[in-house]
Every structure is written in structure tokens, then in C-alpha cells.
Length: 140
Picture 1 (cartoon, rainbow, N blue to C red):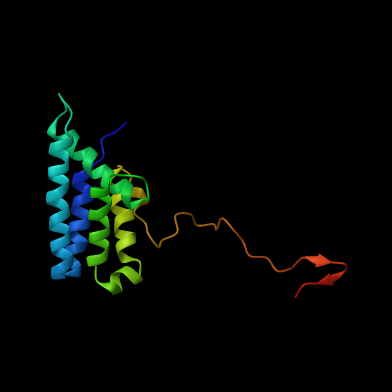
Picture 2: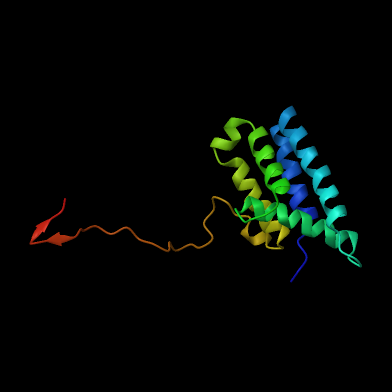
């Protein structure tokens, strides 16, 4: 399995944090970065490179953002980051979008960073007129 590209993940979220320019959100992000580094050092396996350990720690953070099970530490960092994001960026889905984009970049799939844009020209589903008929009577 390919290494999670934590550098791309981090850069994408850092750019968002800089754009938001909120002191509490910036602080939360800096704490996440430092704690993930500590997490990687503590969980580093024998003969594992520092890069691989860091990659695994950031991938755990990304998995938590996708709702996967992880340690309470990682989950707490994610919750803190989201809670410190200004409300307007939470309610409009910006933080979720940026996390999804960062995960796609981390997994090496930049083509999936197309939030809000159609990937296909033809729609996958069509709305058709009509309805169900019971006993000869239309429902609407």
C-alpha cells in the first residue's frame, strides 16, 4: 500500500487555516501538528523510518475525519480542530470539504479534489415525472 502523503494533507489544511485567519483555529491546528508529531515518535516501530511513522500518524488523523475508529487522542485532536473552526466555516461545510480534499491529496488522488464540480458531464440519476398508482388512483 502506498504511503499516505501527509505533507500534501498538512499543506492543504494549513492553507485553509491561513485563509480563515482565526486565532483559536490557528492555535488548534498548531497543537494538532505538534501532537501528531509526538504521536508518530511514540508509536514508531523498530526499524520504521521517521517518515513512515509520521505518515501513519497523519493517516490515523485522516481516518478519524472519515469516521473510522482511532485512538481517543487522535479523535480529541480532530474534535478540537473542528470546534475551534469559526461557526460560519463549519455550517457552510468548508471544514468538511477541506478535510475531504486533504484526504484525497494525502491518498495521492488529486483528481478527486473537485468538490462542488461535476466529475461527469452526464448526470447519474434523472428525475422523471410520474408516480405510483394504487387501485387506479394517482397518489398526487
